Length: 370
Image (cartoon, rainbow, N blue to C red; front, side):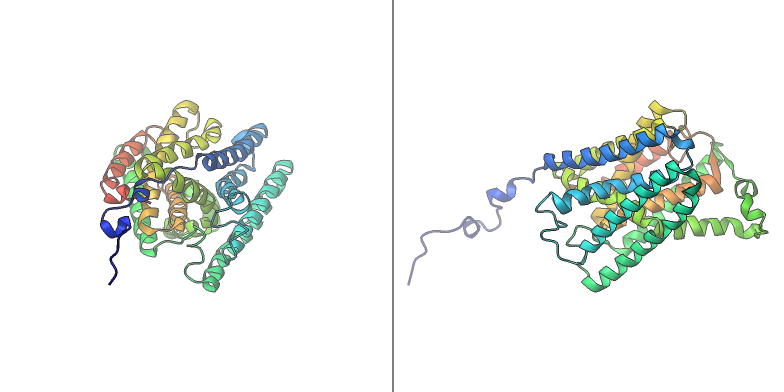
């Protein structure tokens, strides 16, 4: 019979965590700095080019704004694939099928960059190029399905690009649509907006003898149901950068603090286009402040969806749905009289959104440790 004379800490007190487990994870500020430097640098350089080319009046604006949305993911992927050795998408270690999507995203960003440059030089090409870019976006969706089928359910999970739970996609998506519909109703009730005349707003559909009764449902179908999926690859460009890379680092400060900081950074990232009159025309100062607050609110909602679904693509879908749904209600239902003081993205919407955030923060999930 032998007598054990030494014990491990786990054997002495199995329910008490060891010292190493009590040390919270630390934010890698060096990596955060590299990512922000690259994402902000590329984006604001692009915005400078747009400003010098005439600002938002330039016919290529929409194309350049789509390219801007791709740049956070491009920055995170570039750093992860070639500079951060322990990244799950490092080209040294990632031999899974997900690597092909990373390479596809590099190609897609390059195509958008080339198209943006061509559109700035030759504005007449804008419509043709925008139509042609629909092809790689659609092929990207097909590529996702094929890679998921070939690689199995963990294909994108291991690369930090999990799809998330479908019920969260559509459950939270429905909540988002109802939230914007409610705000649209409030704009109408409190006379903070005017009803849209569809025949005036969409004359091209009227001239083709399109049935009037089917006009609004058709627009809703295209923008709210189909649009988010067609824009999924583009919105992933922001979400993989902000929610996928940056959020994963900043929530090491604590989920509530980390997401707040992320929202502030995300809002500031939008500032150059706000200064040019996007979202809040003629209000560069208040517009910049409101955009930060709006992004903080949306950051909490998207982070909550990511925590609940455990998938970054959930945020990409909800981001695209948010853009499409807000556009639908503003363009086709009730047009706000003021972007600053109407529901939608104005002060009343920010106050309503803050209430929603306070309700979300009651969930214990915000106190969970990564």
